[in-house]
Image (cartoon, rainbow, N blue to C red; front, side, top):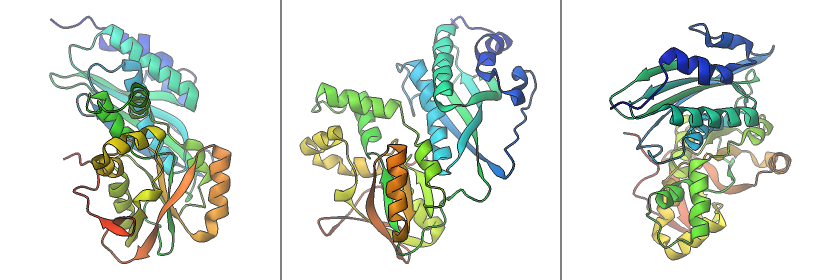
Length: 328
């Protein structure tokens, strides 16, 4: 039997329209399209991400947290482009099992993060499916025209930097699915929170405009994502595994399970900023990190040539069976 659920237009009027309040270009979700106008001298930065139940989150996860993660993974890409959030569109592909209680909690989570990040809903779509619950968000941001760093600007001699800590997201997924029994309850809770509730580094990303030569967020895995920068820039990279910043929880896990180092380096779901910059920008990076309140550390270097990313530890090359999570 299908769960009780508002009809499409009732869902829009009751739960979704309030999320668009105060954004003129949304037209109270009464039109098929929205209108977005960036400020003079700025350009739109656009990103779409889809989250699928059973792949990116689990059926038992709190719907408010699912909503916030769905929005934040898009905001993380805006952060990597140095953009300020403007608005977003939401497509919900709903199986019959999703009821009004779930949808109400989901929309409450979106409302909380809209206040946090200064963004509003401006449109989207709802439809039903016999398959998995799917959430698709397209986020729009603005940035000074031509100021977004992208992936293609890394040059030989640049340093490689990363914000925050790496590996918490991938270890959090293991904790969330009962695959880290060796970890303490406190460490599992910390890692679980990092997996379910990313922290988009929007302030830092904006402060890195004109500082970073290339930038992206760590979504699929540190090594693989750095490989994307190398491919686009026509360079190679070397990173020091011992320099990669780890949380206390991740260090405790690796002390018991050193075999999980590859998971830390290639597992993804960290949503930290990964960027390159010339040595002359060191002071500017330190200043940006301090003003944003986000730690940034150097983990490697960019070299001429090809061959992607080499990972070293203690002067020896590490052989990884994979560089990142692959969707297909």
